[in-house]
Image (tube, rainbow, N blue to C red):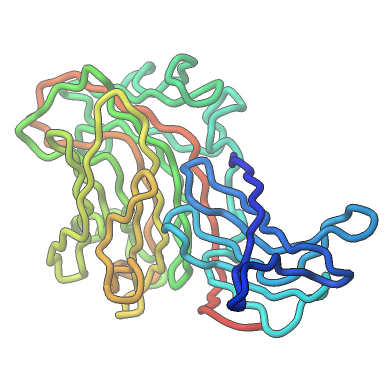
Length: 328
């Protein structure tokens, strides 16, 4: 998934010329560098080779985010192979996989997913979409009504996590022949749900807009967030090209309070605005303590008249324990 590059670093010092930094035994210090597949720095550290040709870390060791150029996620210092001083770790670097089983459909099935399609072939696996062996193709026709709406969606109900921090990542493609509509169209929803502890169920639950969604129109996606009072906020936009895959990345803390946040990237570019510190948009983002679940596909105004298709692949969910930037 990444390319590896070797670079020898020569440090200039003194007034009489340049010197090569050295480690123990006068071994010259070099720099090991790795890059993500998008070209951004992934990992780098200083080292020297011992008498037997083995790599010995000596100097700094750094890891960087895949999504924000040269954003440090881990930093350490070494002397002759031994770590010295504190270790810096950013929360995002400590994420552990929560669920990726069949997020890429490589089992050749929809195991782990709930399907919301009106027809037998509304949601099917295809082998020619260009991402892995299988991708999901979702086709929506006028009048395809499911759960009261014109929709075709893949659902992960295990993705709700109130007060938890999660990473959601997947690949998406709008069909090359997609016909534009003058009505609203949604390609992703983080959907609210009733909280049984409050006596709520789907029969008595108020009708709300989804707390977080991505709307599509004319080659542009808008990320929309609603608070409990149903006030809408457009928290970012990004362009997309029909017939081309793009990668979506969310890091979210679900909360009824002001500590809730949404951080989003599309094709490794920030979508949510920089707030002076990072790209998190802070706001309440749930309607109750039961949390939101993920739906991806196509959901649109029932007046739509076109037959359109979208593709989904490579879903990964991560659960993150609360871990602010820290030294250990």
